[in-house]
Length: 255
Length: 284
Image (cartoon, rainbow over all chains, first blue to last red; front, side, top):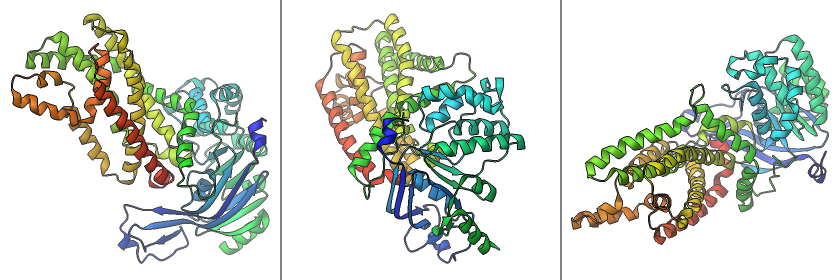
């Protein structure tokens, strides 16, 4: 597409990366006897401030063309891992090296302003995803077609229903050209017909992107978009390999 | 394309390196399309659905300055043509300074959603804040222009130093917001403390009271005490801009003090940025 993109290979490397959250407003004493449960990372209580060890010794090497699904229980560290891979969290220990332009899609609503029109929100959301104003203006028609919002695009976003907002957000997100695409689940609340339509667009987006990491609880979605998978448990990588193998192992434990 | 958000790779073990601190500042600057848009959006947001829109900024400033100008001209027995421009210009500058400080204290905590969902240099939020203050300042210049018509000031060519003075204020606003922003994100108690200090500083700084009148006071004790105001750093920031805007003779020492604060302030901020930049997304 351009020189800068050819100049570097898209890749993500992490080496023993850990993410520890200090929880400043929790009383360390009350957490001292917390036993490790099924849900959530480990809570260390040795230090003065309680720390949640959200990710432990994560070593990954993902290259151009990787289509990775993320599975695991709630609180196993999927979202935190996505944030580590996007560069939002830099590892507290270990290293993370990210090459390429990251488009993180964790929450469709973030960066949207309810008081301005849908059209303006398309531009804003695009700027947040690393596009330029001009690029987004070229895509407006395409997004308008896809969302079927028509004249509503000129209305403030606060007048939209939840489903309409999701349509708009999906329209913008699926119109960009990401090098690294990080998807968190939570793409729901749309009617069935629209979901079919967005699936196609999502897979087109995935094809355009150089590298995909997708966290989901839906086997169907994972099979559509991914070929390999990572199983997270208690903030560690429990298993990494071909999608079907990992899914089988993951489901096997769950039952 | 591609350069807009080219997430610079995080080289091995460089979390606390100078290069990542500078990369943050430079990377944020490259995303000026984004923060310029957001800064402008913030202003329109505030006056959305009102008929006059951002003109309200100017109107509010004019009303405050006229009311206080009349009040203090009466209290101090000064000429309104002196007191009112003095208060107006002081207020406009103070609005910029206090905006950078008090909003700077919330610059990261008020952007939790953006910081934890989108990878962007921290400086983006800071530039957006300073840019918003610059836009407020520009709106208030409208009132200043009207004031120049009503109370003409003795402006000279040399008063173009107002332009570098505004730039210096913006450059200082950026480090203040960055530094206070990082520190208050970690220690939330500092937020109310910052707000009260800003309020206190307003009264300690010659904005409604005229510094030189006190210096030349017939009462030697008052004149002596007034000299203490020189210790107030805000005085120097106000003076480098207020003097050219009112066509008053300028004094080098204010520029020197501001210059020193700029260098020292940025040096401290860079150290803090280097040490704690990567921690902010954990703390918010």
